[in-house]
Image (cartoon, rainbow, N blue to C red; front, side):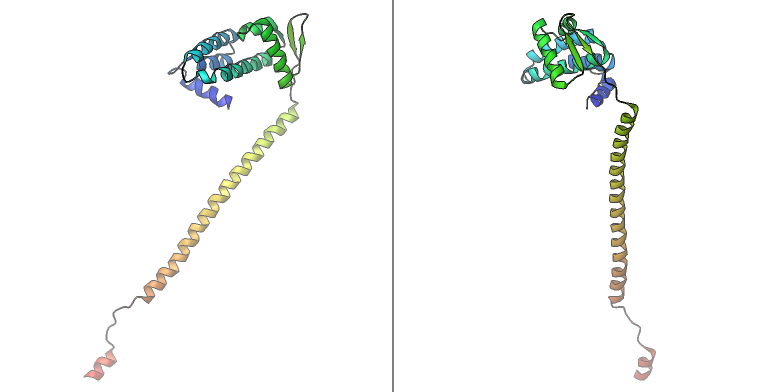
Length: 193
């Protein structure tokens, strides 16, 4: 879903811009974390002031921080806690607790080193055969959906053909049952004379 949103934002970025779309663009298109952090701060200001969006403020900020941390952790091997908490617009202690909770909840393969005040990421790469299996599963699913659609069309076409064929004999029967004007028989006309 996020990939679809990013594609849409890229397409309309020349005609529409706001802090939220600029945040997504900075994070997912440009991978500019400094600009994304600045846009996150602007988003917080906009959401606080907007009458309709105030209700979604906490959810938006929490999810935006989550996405920011996710992308940031995917790219970097060693992360400075102070730098990440500053980019997330959080206080040092609050940010450290949030990052530790994030690592625990998402089960990231990472270790927090409080001596160096950093997070060490252990990247996990799917083996090639696992990637092939996952893509094949998606292909099998798409094939089943396509096959179902084709069968559905085939059945509906067959029903239309059957109904047309059923209508032809009925039309012939109706035509045969219609009384036709007969010419008087020659024998009857001769007898009458």
